[in-house]
Image 1 (cartoon, rainbow, N blue to C red):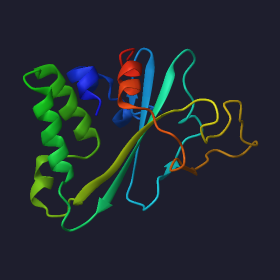
Image 2: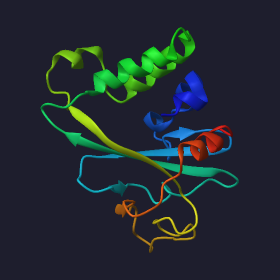
Image 3: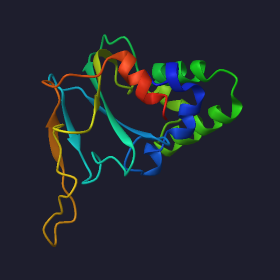
Image 4: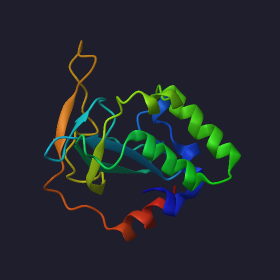
Length: 173
């Protein structure tokens, strides 16, 4: 989804495997990607600051809804192949992509295990995390002794950004 606007450079912005708070970190925009196989668009937020935009930057949330199915059209291996095809001959981007995949535990032997989840894409929506977007307030501080919080958000009722709006925002990545 990010390739049409950002191109192979997106591999260099992929920070999720490094433990960053957002999955993609650009100069003007951060992107958090959430995927669910639930029937509704609910996502678990695992960090207090995960839905906080850094000072002077915008934050987008990409909501991906998948349907698990033995007859599903794709696996993670198919997505890996698709990204590699889009990277093309950019050797440095391929190296970065493969290194990040490795950090996540991916290796080519997984293709033969038969344990890869088969899925069909149901929907993809992009939201700007600002204003009344469902999240903890930016100034929220947990009580003394609370070291972590997990909560769920439901984005199913929110208006998502249009493709052209997303492309315009991503140009500042």
